[in-house]
Length: 83
View 1 (spheres, rainbow, N blue to C red):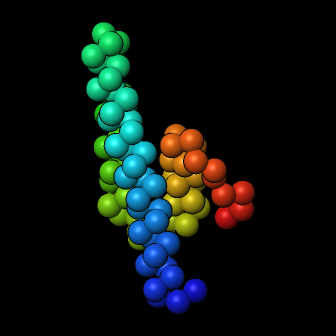
View 2: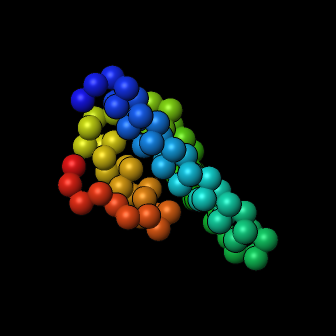
């Protein structure tokens, strides 16, 4: 894999993670308006995803892959079937 392809893959993975964090925040805000409690849990998870996205290049390959797959599921996107 050349450097351009690696950079493109990192950007794509970061985008998935950031969109998942944004969805968690959005859903938590909606839930708050509906009177539901415990939105702080969604915000906490969103913060963790923010940090993972920020340090994506430093993550273990398996941790990165699992994070992206979990975020794809959260976004109702098709996860990869192989690492």
